[in-house]
Length: 141
Image (tube, rainbow, N blue to C red; front, side, top):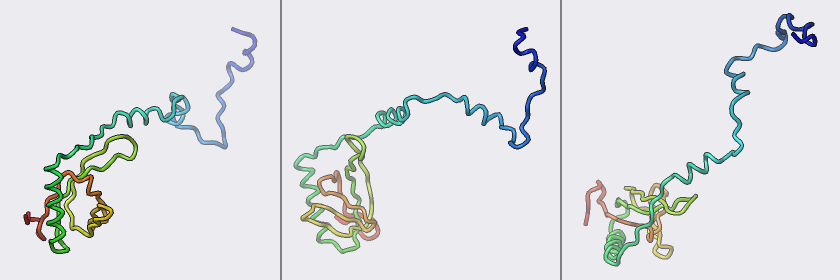
């Protein structure tokens, strides 16, 4: 054996009197792999997340939505509607189609927006389908 360590090789293992013994899981965490590229996993997940493309409506579908909007304008204030609209994704191109069923709060023709009772604002140009419902949720038109 090496003479250099002969004095200490048979000494008892030191145990601290002032600090508690570290658990095995805490000791193992010290030697966990180091991630040199922080944020890389998040970037890969974001890239893999799927989004839908906005569907371009033809003139007949646009006319059908405009007719439903006209019906909404002439309906009672507490009328409900089922609206499917495109919600753009805030982080990347594309988005998702969302359907909501709620009472119509306000229609702002100048801004081309519909505000629902719940506070959701929908741009009229983002609407894919609009079904006007009665007070109990039955189709009026």
